[in-house]
Length: 397
Image (cartoon, rainbow, N blue to C red; front, side, top):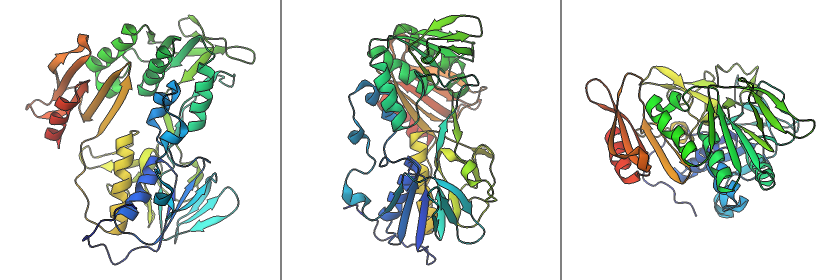
């Protein structure tokens, strides 16, 4: 049985029923944290997918390679852990009344009324601005996407990955390991530069070349060719790339449309304060669908990373229960590409000083730091150097 927190005093105004809209990592983390912190009221989790809650990062890696199966992805490791939660899976939320007690309208015509609603509806993969309804064209966001893509890769020879971000790079890495011919195309001149900076972006992009993947940067997709099944891609420079499979990884759009008319403030996600509260009483938002106010930058920020979703789920549970907040760590994310572990923590700006402090990028093992003009560490990046990275990460707090 899950261990519950002992000796922690909660607020006397504890809600009797908490509904979590979205069986995402952030939503499941919130549900489990409520129980861990001793909450004994009713918890209902609403999810549009029929699958039991699952972990998404392996979908682009181990699951595509066939080294993990659906059962290995479960976020509910035992039946016992989920028995004190009411599950409403395969039933999307289609509306929200938030004037009094939150009332969530479901796609099957029913509704759920609760004292508190935590919105964790995640995000969906962004589509290309060209016709992409051909068979053999995929996005990768959920388990059903991964199942279909794994089947297609098993029969493919040539793969084009649109987007050189982390999802695109991970899919390319998996496809190469499956023995396929892979081309990655990216609209920006410097892949990952907007996330990691120009220097690190270039070092990560070099991994594609080292592993036999063709990288085309600074070009966009003009047209997908094929009658019923995709046969190739025409690029903005008129290059034709033959393809049996096209994987689109060009970002994600937060799932907020279902709450139109609720009065919630929305701007590329549900806007919240630093404690995940929306502008409606007793309605909170976390994970990929939320833009949370960041007190350091003074702006609303939407993080699409596993560690952020898990941390926000735990943090919002403490807020709802009236528990003291925990110190929040610096932003952190990781990626597995071409057999390498990439890790980043902190926040840096273009003006910060970049320095390789250990190792050699050419050898595929190094640590790099970003520091401000006063020499203060702002961010750290590592490739296959987890122990050294952990030390710098602790310095970041």
